Length: 76
Image (tube, rainbow, N blue to C red; front, side, top):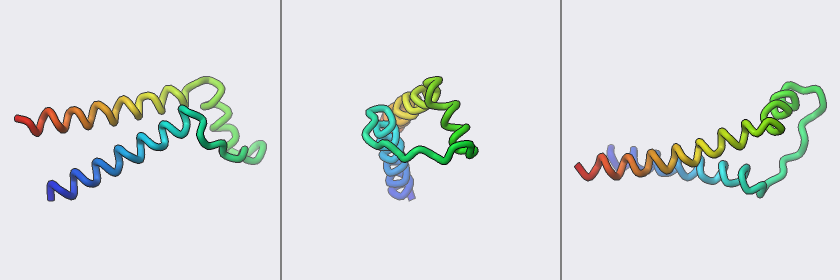
C-alpha cells in the first residue's frame, strides 16, 4: 500500500509542477472565454491582479516542501 501512496503522491506532484510551469512561463495561451461569462469575470479578477501567479508559485513551493518532507520523515 505504501508503494501506491508514493506513486499517487508523485503523480500529483508532477501534475502540480507541470501546470504551474505552464502558467508561470506562459507556454500555453488558452483561447479567451466568451465575454460576460462567469469564467471571463473570474479570470478577469485573477490574471490582472497577479493572484494567479501568486497561487502558482505557492503550488511549486508546496510540491517542493512536501517532497522534501516525505524524504526527511522516511529517514527516521
